[in-house]
Length: 117
Image (cartoon, rainbow, N blue to C red):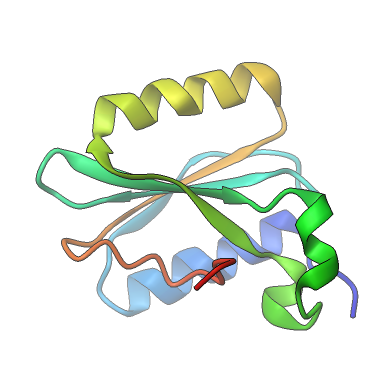
């Protein structure tokens, strides 16, 4: 199965989260075809979690039918939002084609396919 494009994945993710009652927005648009996607989950208490794409080396062990090939790993958990914002600025300097999506959930659920869970 072919991997779905970044813009399609982000569009579906934002719609699904908003429909479920979790405010979600695209903070930064990246490359439509294959830009890396980072998801910040604000816990609404000053902390947040950050998810990013799994390194390609680990994708050999992942079922390609999962989320159109989009699998994530948790990069930071329950840290001050400022720490995540700084990390995302660094990611943008490294990869100008990346996407940044922000969603809110007090429990920290991300509704992503996460490796290791």
